[in-house]
Image (cartoon, rainbow, N blue to C red; front, side):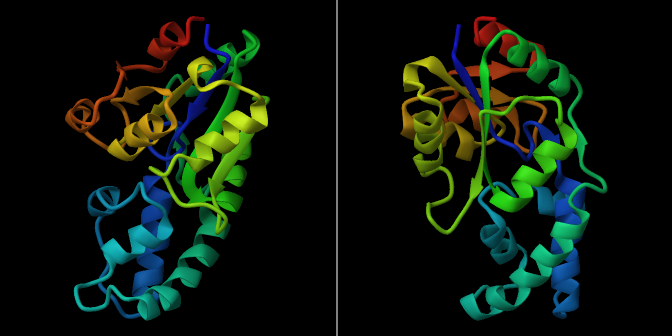
Length: 217
């Protein structure tokens, strides 16, 4: 049995795309830029807020100065509205409580800025005893840099061989590979199954219940 399961957040535990889209479009519109459909925003997420906003900005305005102007508007809106439209994927709460009840440590490794990551996780999963909730900070690079996983392994005293990393994108699969941790790609998230397979996911999960078997529970 695995001692630790590390989860990506957006597209893995929670469907956050509507709230992310609203925040991005608010920031874009406030600064006079065109907005995007939720479907378009979905293709832009996964590598942190700055990469999302740079992808959303029009050609010719993808520069540091424009990003610096738009980012605070995104954060101020998202801080206040990040639990309005977000929903947990079916079966996730049950999965987490089952793993928790079996003594498996649970952690989150997200490219969402850490304050927001901790808020939404504690809001939607208040009964889970999280061993760690880690998000994007100025002190470390965003995924697929493996530092966030190394930090969680160190914080929980877990060897890489005893951990499982679960995510919905190529970024997640590469993060797990870079950290030397077994990976699970989930098919209900923001990216297609083909992306997960092409990037070498060790396992594919079509439902949260599949993760119980992969964790050896």
